[in-house]
Amino acid sequence: MLDVYAFATPNSVKVPIALEELGLPYTLHGVNVRKGEQKTPEFLRLNPNGKVPVLVDTPESGDPFVLTESAAILVYLAEKTGRLLPASGEERARVFEQLFFHASGLSPAFGQSGFFQRFAAEPQPLAIARFAAEATRTLGVLDGVLAQRPFVAGEDFTIADIAHFGWLWRRGFPNITFSDAPHVARWYETIEARPAVQRGIARVEALVPQD
Image (cartoon, rainbow, N blue to C red; front, side, top):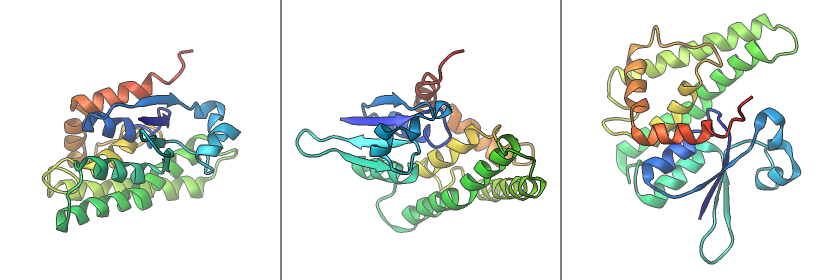
């Protein structure tokens, strides 16, 4: 049995999308980060880092396996099913190249840019300029990659595409557009049109309380 603890965040959405693509049944549990539910003692027992998503894989016999960090969860699910990740060679290396670029470059740049624009207690012009420029730069790097191939790691859709899609789905947070990234725009439309992606998005959006 697979349980996912998540909210409608850029990192959370990756896991339901992957599970929908892989056709694996799962139970989705909402963790409202707007109310600080990720900092409760109950949730911190799952993830001491206090962040969503979390995957709990409970076998028919044995102890539950708890995994955090969206990229690690994507790799685990891909290896569990033998799908969305090449088994070996250069193709597999390209997937990890993009996963690490996402985790070390695009994701933190987008997140910090959005934070300093929206949540900083006082305006921080230097931080805003620094991270907005880095978000734009990393988007340009991805656009260059997608100018050479249909998907971020090559000819096939993989977990690397799911990883990048999460933050690009929430690109409004750092005020990013695709106006200067036509190859990213083409790729995004392709991913967004996938039925499994649409189902995953709908699942996490349903977690958001309606005011």
